[in-house]
Image (tube, helix red, strand yellow):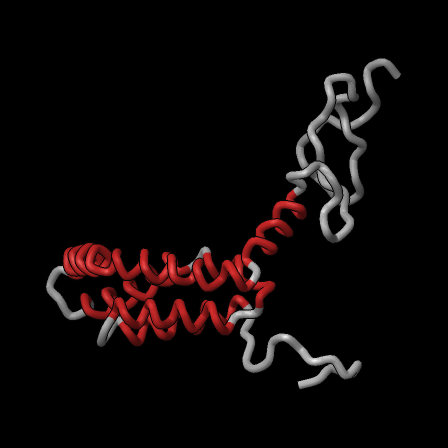
Length: 175
């Protein structure tokens, strides 16, 4: 594949957004809950980590535990529907499935991190830290990062238009 400038792109093929990769992981995990829950989850983690766009790695790598829990809870809820004590069956099913799946959850999450690291995860973390203002400068989008008040600054803020937080607005006492 070439761009309009004639240079070759470094990444070709299917690339998913973070939402798409998380949905793919959920579907694979959900289908795998019926047959082989652990290996299916690990395969879903690998597929999602390889198919996601590099800029969306950070949102993806933090979601495997949530996806595993959601898929397991859904399957156990469906399984407990016909029982006499649905709540008891659901609780026991969740406890059993989550404890049996814990090694697979850990392995899939670790494998996803191992794949995402060389694909650019550290750069995503640096960008997030910069956006949050951890270094005290402006964010990557150019917006000023809020900073804590210095002791000598006035303890009031002029009221911005359309902003109705309960605060004391007005002039400083010395004015």
